[in-house]
Amino acid sequence: MLVLSRQRDETIMIGDDIEITVVDIRGDKVRLGINAPNTVPVHRKEVYDAIKRENENATRVSVEDMIKAKDQMKHKPD
Image (cartoon, rainbow, N blue to C red):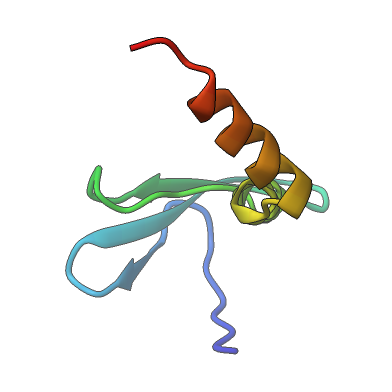
């Protein structure tokens, strides 16, 4: 892990397209401003973890679910 020290209004660059600026520091809280291309998703870690967990859950299909889907396809009118 790279650890950098920055003061208020100082910026860190990630590649050519992503800027992270220290906007404010109050006590033990640091506010960051992030400029990134729209194609780069930016999330807090806990939100990212929740999205990842939901995506993984969505890919899990039980045998029973497959049988139900197959039965529904058989009885579906054309």
